[in-house]
Amino acid sequence: MADKGRVHVLIGGRVQGVAFRFFAEKWANAHGLTGWVRNLADGRVEIAAEGDRAGLEAFVERLRTGPRLAIVEDFDLRFEDFSGEFGDFRVLFS
Image 1 (cartoon, rainbow, N blue to C red):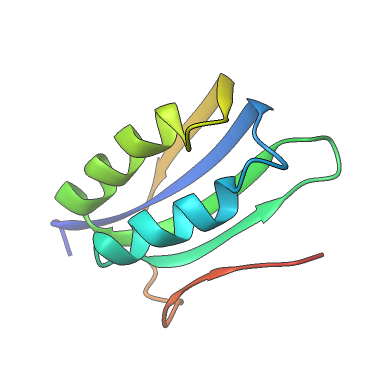
Image 2 (image 1 turned 30 degrees about the vertical axis):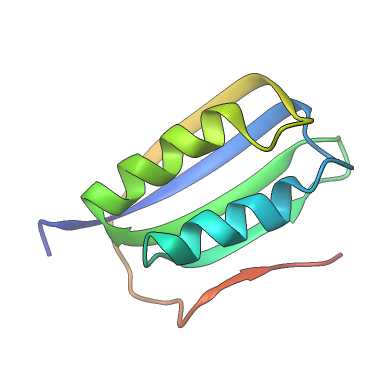
């Protein structure tokens, strides 16, 4: 599975209340990724996504900017091993 991977991303700034989760869902689906996105109580957005490395890289580049009203100030990205645990990409609501 050398061509597949996983990313875990924590994004801070003005990222809640600007449709960031739905932006992430749209682009994850466009790149054929699986996983989830959720808001955290501390104001950040957290994302776990899996798929082919090219799709992950394109997805991460979109996340660095976010939707039109977002202001991304902090971007913590970790690459991890592919697990295959997700069936789709979804928005999680707390």
